[in-house]
Image (cartoon, one colour):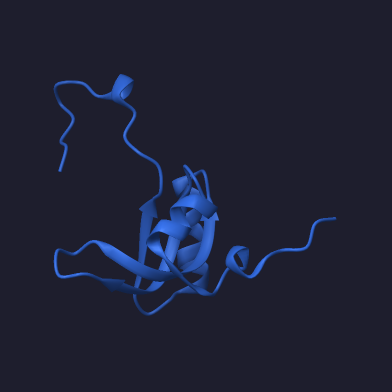
Amino acid sequence: MKPRTASRVLGTVQAWETIQKEYPDKFVLLENTVYDPISYIKEATVLYKHYHRKKVIDKELELNPKRSAIVYTGGVRLDRIDENTLLI
């Protein structure tokens, strides 16, 4: 079994770019999130990750962190966008 590297251990502060690379196309539950002046995530602590948003919400309710965010690390699939989709 391959040992886990420090960057893959949940509960450590990581840069947003690292989180996106380590957990591609997953919903991540974040805590201690640091934002830049434009409100983009700079770094955060990953508490949990899963490809189903519902599972992440359930884990958030279980852990009950003081301040948290659930963010998707993947991009928007253009084949799933229709005229009713709001892009921010």
